[in-house]
Length: 414
Image 1: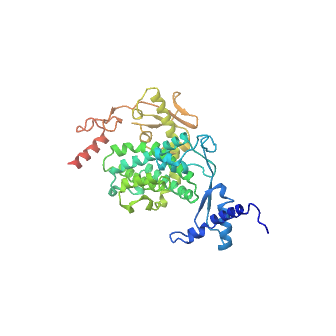
Image 2: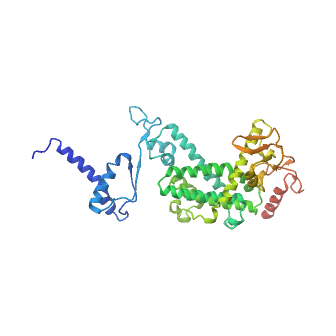
């Protein structure tokens, strides 16, 4: 039988697909440091009828099962406008150029924060937005490293003895940890990244770090509030570096070594995910503080207006009056230290008729705030305005709280 004119071409194509489909045999089975079947086959969406299919058919025919436990496919990389990259259009983006200009972790963050199930887009503006997102995560780690220079393990506070604010943060840690484990197991890196980024930006930087700066800087050395905050910051550092290690491998390693040096196995990539105690998860506490943050949004909105109108310079100059008509919000707000929560020198929950000049937000019903100026003198140490500034003759420019903190510091120094 005569061979067709294109027989050599047909044979070459068949050989190529057979070779790629049988890579599991000589790549996995022949190497002692790998296992068969593979945990994961990763390739582009064009391989559904290519490498994935030829591997499946060849392995099932010779081994009786697929050579992989899972398959993950991704789309193709396009430019910012969704066009195919080509030299003629001048819209190509070389990975090595991104790494040279911005670092390998920026390229990793772009890839892992993208929806790989669809075609991915990349370009100068997208890379810049990735750099901005990366900077927020890095700044969170820098803040933790700076604050933890004052951490001493012997000062650690047990969970049951912590203020509610610290227990709320640990509740959020438990929630994030559970979600991230699921996301990594599902190869949903975008969702894992989003959970970590939102936690750092919304819960930590915008709320917890801002509120606890006063305790970290101004509370007495032995203060329970200060020690509890440092205990939580230590936990946050240990969790965040390990959570981020699969995403930002170089940044997580840099932060880990900056804190621990060569101890603790020498690398963040040798650490297991932290074991989060079950009692950190407290749904009732979480729901309560979500209501508190709802009220806080109205307070901070009122203070922003005061700053914009030049009636105050900083929030510590204020002493807002807070009216809460919603029963659930009022119950959650009762007993909370609103001066601390709102970062003002004083704050009070009021009842009765709401003044006409009160500030409100359309999305938060039955909550109104009347900004007032705090009365007293400005503490030279904490910048709080308090009526007891100068009460301690030995520290005439300080409030009673700050004077006591300085007295303890002086005693320790002596």
